[in-house]
Amino acid sequence: MKIVYDSDKDILQISFFTRTVEETTQIAPGLVLDYDEDGKVIGLELRSASKKVDNPYEMLYLIDRANDDKPAAKIVE
Image 1 (spheres, one colour):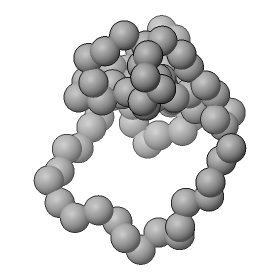
Image 2 (spheres, rainbow, N blue to C red):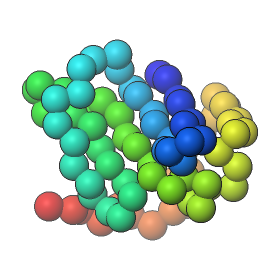
Image 3 (cartoon, rainbow, N blue to C red):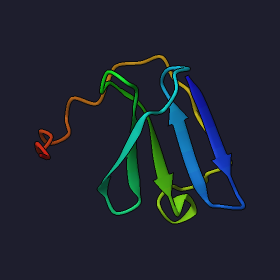
């Protein structure tokens, strides 16, 4: 996994795999998913990141349990 913050463009990118991005889809304002040639999500991009995260220059990486207390995800078509 690779995480990049581009301060000039204010974009935070998270790549889950080192594959070529074949398609992108904006699923919410400023939130873009990247797909490979098989349609698998391989990354995401958060635009105007400095307005949407506490500090785009700081990251905390934990091996821990997932947050199961949050509401169920909505299905977006």
